Image (tube, rainbow, N blue to C red; front, top):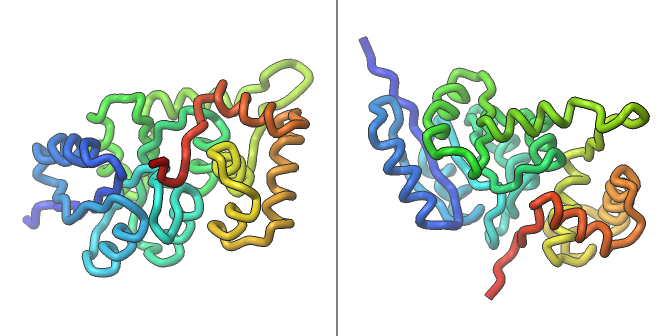
Length: 223
């Protein structure tokens, strides 16, 4: 009988994270790491030359001509539709995790959870099912519950969440438009809609909200 081997590509801009995950996966005879990338450019080039079954990718990776986050994962879904995706993320807020969930990502693992969750996430994603690590599952469960009797939960669309993340990381509207390949008007509209859903009227309030939610992180290099 042929032994199951899942070919995996890893992507994370922190070398230490890749070393740790590679070590964790090395004990599994069913998982074979085929290559590693440190930004979206390296990841896409690797995928073009190295067939794999599952990608394990960080959500936020500075640099790289294909961006990161939702933009990158949508591109991967179009270019490599048969490859399963497991996303690692430091963002434990409902907007971003909900955007990944809505996008249909097979595996989502919070970096707040143990690295031991990565291997089962790979196995489950390979099978075509969905895996959510404990922190992610708890956040998504809370997202589905009303915050009070009068209002339902705030639910940003994947594109709105991505625009907000990039904006609060310090990018201007025109820079976001260029990176996401959308018009400045579209980006402004998506930002405004997100702020309206969150009940915020000023940019400073949006940044403060992002800090409180723990999802303020740059999507570009900070020398």
